[in-house]
Structure formats: C-alpha cells, structure tokens
Length: 245
Image (cartoon, rainbow, N blue to C red; front, side, top):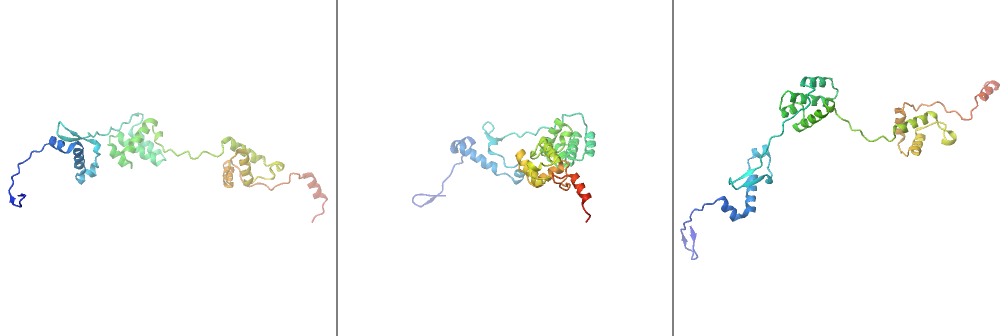
C-alpha cells in the first residue's frame, strides 16, 4: 500500500530481490562487512561465552571461497613431558614421605601422578595447583631432580658487615678499649656503635650491635671496671697496715 502525490492510496507490487554476500560487500563496503561480522561474533549464547570467552575480532577473517567467516584454529597444548628417568613414581612418593617441606611434598606427589599416567589437569587438581604451575615444576624437576623441587628462600638484604669486619669487631671487643684513645674503660653498645661508624662507615642502632655481639658468641655481662693505674701491691700493703674498721 503506497500513497501518490495527489494523496490517493494505490496498491504497489514489489518484486523479490535476491541478495548475495558479494552484493552486500559491494553495497556496504569491506569495512562495514567486517563490522557486521564483529557484531555477529559478539552476539553468542551465554554458554559459549562462559566456556570459551569472547573471541578477539582479529582472530576471524572472511573466507571468500567458502562464503563464510573462518576463525583461527585452536590447537591443543603440548603434552607434559618428564625427561628424567632416574626416579619412578614410587621413588618420588618415598622422597615425599621423608621431606619436611610441605610444598616440595605436593610437587613430588603431583609429578608422581603424572608419571602414573594421570592427565595433567587431574594431577594438578589433586595436588592443589593449576596445570601451568605443574608444568613449571616439571621443568624444574627435569633440570634439578628432586632437589630442584625444594622451596627457595629469598637471600634477603646484604649484611651490613662482612665476615672479615665481624671478625675484626670481635677481636676489638675481646681486647677491650684503650682508655687514653677510646675514653672508656669498658665497651658499651653505644661505644661500639660509634666505633663501627668510625671504622667501617656503617650506621646501626644500639640494638643491632647487641644482636651482633650475641651472634659472635659474646655477652653484655662484663666484670667490674678496674682503674687502669691500679697497683695491686700497694693495695695489699694498704690492707695490711690499715687498722680494721
């Protein structure tokens, strides 16, 4: 039903039109056709999006020979390969029973399951890790064996004093201070703090000095200070000639 210029409604017959992909591409252009493909990719069922995720548009192309949109071929991941043959699954389980490292035990048991022929996903799930983590530990096992599965602790910050400097500090503490040069008759942590800063150019807290002394096998307990000019012979003579109190 259509309306003419004079306002009279007339019946109009519309012939059917055959539309092909080539005609659509000529009419809308290649860019709009790619946009149409992009919209088609986005509108998928919820189940497919949940299982596979939203695919990237770059992974799809238009196959002119087949008159269809072809996606990239997804290949399966490589199989888990354990190259070491010096230990079997039973040996790994025996090593796990003797280990004190809980993380190493899980890794040994996971690789033992893989040696038994269990799928990587199942072996990883039963050992409390994911597939990629198990693969990483298999590489570590191939390179270092059972010892390569041990947990590695961080070395931490470098020590403030070297072993030679700590040995020098121990000898200094055992020898005692020089009253004329150091101005004290016995070492305190505060005095050693100043000595360490002066000799080794290292600034530390008094508590750190106390920890170092403990690590060197020394104690803060010291005998009663003695005057450097003390004369034991004169002291004994004084005791003999003096009247008792």
